[in-house]
Image (cartoon, rainbow, N blue to C red):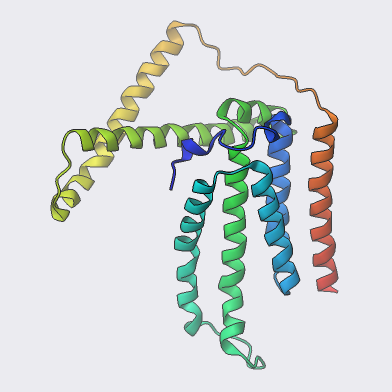
Length: 249
């Protein structure tokens, strides 16, 4: 697996010609399409699988990242299939195992789709473009600032965790298994102190340089590519809604 910071900006350069808000909106619409897509028929599974593969290929996610994401999704969702023997199905079902496996299978497919779509959207953005794209979307300012802070703090904590790992390796990590376990309780304290010291230094530097917290409004110029991308994503969402409506009827 590669770290959270390595995903940003690792995707296709051609997709980055779109406006940042367009890229975020397309990823959000495809994400919503996979969440509401039905899972009752094999055709539904093929449809959501095609949407995932198409978005991953368009975003140009590196193969190393795809392998890491696949391993992460497998470790996350395969244990759900261990619950099949204890799942209660309807008495009229002929095949208990198949009926019980539909629940973890649906959760695994939707969860894997969400992982790949979010990672692919991140791959065609960087942190600065993500902030600018959020500000140009019709989202309340409080929600925009909350999402932006979550992403930035996650990136900062990931970077700090990597630095702690490198520092521990340079200073000699014990080879014994029990010795490594004794180090683990001390890591949160070291990690928290480093974050607090870094935050104080950044706050002092911002105050010294007269940094203003109020974000400046940015303006994006939409092109035909942006309109086509949004229209295609909305068409996909409309198709998913139509398929779900037909299945309900």
